[in-house]
Image 1 (spheres, one colour):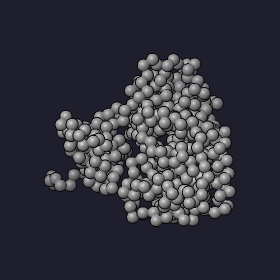
Image 2 (cartoon, helix red, strand yellow):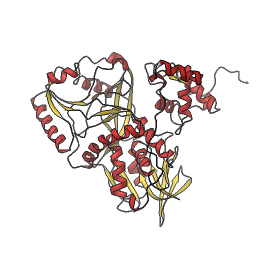
Image 3 (cartoon, rainbow, N blue to C red):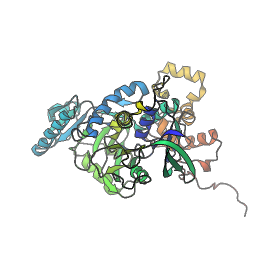
Length: 483
């Protein structure tokens, strides 16, 4: 029997798994997808917000401000990427300036450590492409940008290294309450026993909760956000995260510099019934272009290298719902974790364990817990001399697989066979960025596929792009067939 089962391995479930790894508790993480961070954590703006926007005294406000500060600590422990951009929230006229002043007061009440109202001319010094229609901005220097996939990998890798068990392709299909805890059915067949359940299933938290609760205290709908990606050749076009004034639909269409040099435009916000298959639309991407143009002039739309859509939670409650079930003891909700969930993830994990579960009263701390994780070596960031030395030791570093991002064969093999190894094209892209550059895999995808087939002794017909059902090929065509 396990002490804890965590359902979901997005950024929230991964952060919780790492916190649980500190304790003498037997923990299992179940993920229905074939990888960590594959749904809500997969496609978002990657912003670590300052905490300026949530309602004062809400969990969102308190945990966002704490979470923002914790990223500095986690950067040292987990070696996660952080880009300290700062942010500008923008007003275009006197009416919007009044709203901006109200937002400034909310920022103060939330305890954000640094902020300032500045005029257009001052803001334009550091952001020369700001739209000429702008009159005033709220500057938020503590805003950062990260790389959510690597943050989730870092947490889960560190958790696994400290004794947590992780299983992918494990969909929870039923939960039965017993006198000693729970029986969790996986993939409609396997039964796993546990004392406690932590429901961190993202957009599916209410679906999981329905398995144990007569009345689920929140409802989750999917909200699609569509984005454009500008190639890293435009790096420097925007130096800050650029926000419009927030609305009831969220923070709006943003311009967001990314850690690796690209710039994101988006998202829009469209509530949908289907929480599982987001897709882009002509209307949605048109909306993104039109609204991004309100933030900056002369946006280089000719440098777009891809568009994508992500799904995120849209809850019918205003705040994070982090509570033990009122009906079933030992079942813990991580419901309605929408923006700023990525910002608050480390604070959410600590709040759940310390204030809700009170885990220190149940389990003792491990004496050998290791909080440190080193990120994979990035060959392209090394000096010429260091590259030569590595190639002399391992010639596979000399075989360049992805020309756009300059990723070597050895880095790809390390990703395949690492703590959280992967045998899919998308999994390798998430871990190494092979296929994330200008050609979007046009050059390297076939090479990555052949490496996967070789390393796992598979036929190319068995290789998936992402999900198990997304096979790259249907059949061989250039072979003789018996008639």
